[in-house]
View (cartoon, rainbow, N blue to C red):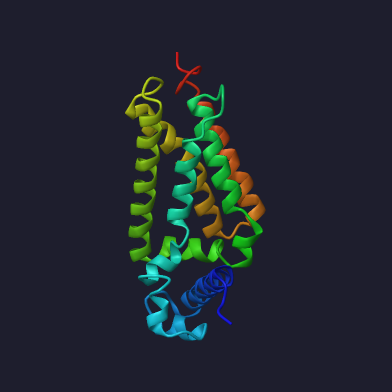
Length: 209
């Protein structure tokens, strides 16, 4: 009997998760540069060729959720609630991203401190991180400006996105890399977001003087 599409998709998702877990474990144990794609594939009993059905490079395993998170944020920007200011909309987007990043699933898969430590210590991953952050913030700011050009200009959009997204992101990454407990990390990230909000009350109606 042929497998149903739903069953095939669930199997693919399990294999993808297994690859991420295996890669992170090997990166931590052996080192990022020293770990080969063949070793990652062997750890979950698939061929190197099958690995490329899920990820194009080792870097892509580390940044497995970057596009999904960006797509979620862009979709939320397109769904402004009645009476919601631009600043409030962006705040909701960032809070949703923080909630998603702090889910138990991430911790269970080992995608918290271990991944952040790799990102902040491996030069190739540092470069990719910068590209991901700049690209994501640029696309979000441009989307925000296009949707609401009458309420904020492009500079204000970049400032709003950069402050509200950048403050909690760098806070969380630094504290995770330092080894702080996840609950304290996410509490600190939300505190950083609150501080950024206080400094941007003038961006977007009705805050702008």
